[in-house]
Image (cartoon, rainbow over all chains, first blue to last red; front, side, top):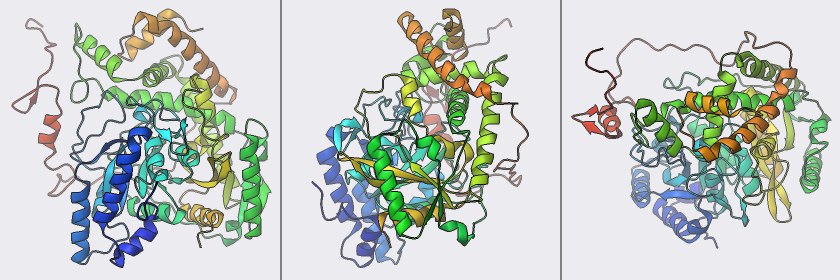
Length: 468
Length: 99
């Protein structure tokens, strides 16, 4: 079930709003109706805000007064780790279940300035730790294409909300693939910007040197629109920065494929769809060449070591003293121990302990030191490759969405990140674009470009989806 | 396999209370994960001084101004305290009289 309003893209809705064919209130009500009908089953939203119509009403009022931005009145979902002042933000965790944000994240401020409407906060793996939204403290999000399967993660709620038309677009966050993975599994577009392109102010930190907020949308043009609205250097985030724009036109039509990486462990249906998409791109004037990224598997191990270390440090702030779940033990140490034992789920607790291990004296060099070297090596390899091609292409995920409960072993879950973590380690921008399906289950193709070259991703993504 | 003592030590460092029945599964999972990530040991050398994407940023030494993101935040922040009194965070007493 969908409506004429909820199956619009942001770009289409924007035109209709500008032409006064529809109102923001119409759009908001339509999205809310879809959420009322579908969310009880899908669990994409942890909360639909009670002021959605009021926000939409304000957007319509602004339009009457002459405002005309492309995102004015557009209904969006917001991942539960992105702060909206006065709204709950729990990072899908018991630790922050009752926490109310005390400020707007910069991405949200910018979208508020544009007059966007926030439908609700979307489900995720707790503290952005996972790959399927199964680690949420408030239940998994089901894949709208097959409710026995995961929607992906950690931004599963955002991807499911867009795929099921409960919003026209959504914000997610990507630490190791968390925007691209659910985009692939749910058949929508997901962009991880260049590290530093979008401010992390107001994003609950997972891995500070990997995290980026990114748009999840139905089309590449929509992703570009949202990205342009939320990007920018922010004095409140010292890691935000701009990157020089690339202008090499010869490279623009050249795509590199790391064949060796795809030789095993990838579903046959995914590979077939990938080859078919490459053929389509050839027909559109692209040259496809073989490349090698020797350090990719090493990169996955390095990714997890850095993840454990930085996550462990970042969640040490949750001690029940200034905010969050607060339980009393026999002593101060006991207060911390109880609050954290009850506030954190199993995956979070595991990663905190693993972080403590890899950062402890005697192990620091062996794990974290080595991981840093692997990261630097991988970054150099990717930078070198992107001097010879304009983008690197591979499937986003090795398989379509798996069944809920299928991956019980943490290591099996980590292994599925093989294609996505590179872009987080190196800071390069990457996009997942739908490339058909395997037995009705969507799958995505991922493109990675040079730092600051989101334009390359939008170009090739639009070509894949025929958006010109 | 990581020892029970090491798991308990990690739990202490992490300030997380573990139930007895959680220890053995954690030994198993953590050992498997460490074995998996140990692949990095095959790389030569350690972290070098690399020129990263980011660089030091300093702001001007002027107080926050009207309309800044954090104005009015004091009351909101105090509202999040588990127990508050007159805008103060009520916490456990940790310094005893004769110290």
